Image (cartoon, rainbow, N blue to C red; front, side, top):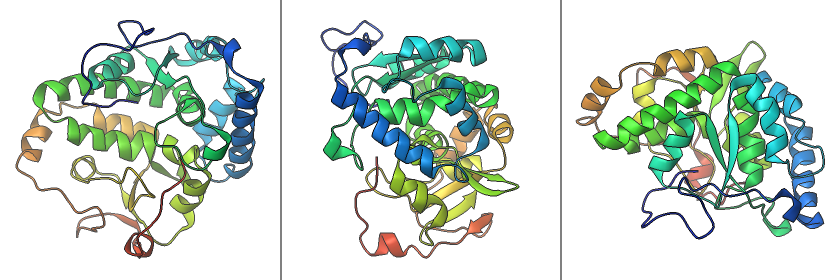
Length: 291
């Protein structure tokens, strides 16, 4: 939900921190039906694919009741579980605003929902991506701590000019992360769990590389913003992810300043390889992926 390049302050109707009222009563019956269509489609697909913390969070927040969730209602349970809250924003927000919200355990979520003809692709994150995709994981105490730490790390990255490296960490964990479990690879990234097509591609397709998570490796790897991923990084556990990132990134940024990017399709000699992909999908030109 962050984006650079903003000029000026928040748009009309938004507060200085870019938050707005959700206006839950303003949603139409058609908008609620879009939510339910997406919700039912994903919840039928995700058992056996999504990680247990996501599925438990989905149950805890009861996100199917009454269509688009009322943020005030789900915040009661979210605050009780981990101290996080969902706040409505008009769309993408400046990086400094985004990091401040995360550092203070507030997740900025888009208030609007996609049209019925946009079920399978949307360029800008909407309330389904943000709430269905992201918020269930925030019920897990370890992941909740990771997100707060990321927000604080983002504030420092901005001051050091290393935001592009930190953005890659967010992309390959929070948005498109995979987890190794005794039952096999499972999804925890919001960009995957909120997309029917990528929920299948990320686990089943032979095309992408699936590599063991290593912090500096991830921070040197570009990513795709408009199609299926060419590489996914696999964590052994949420606790490992938190432990690896609770460190001083200053020396890491110093090394990255002179380190070249690793091509997105590459497999390095010291990578831990879960799946060496064919890259057939990307080599064939790809197509727009699910939102």
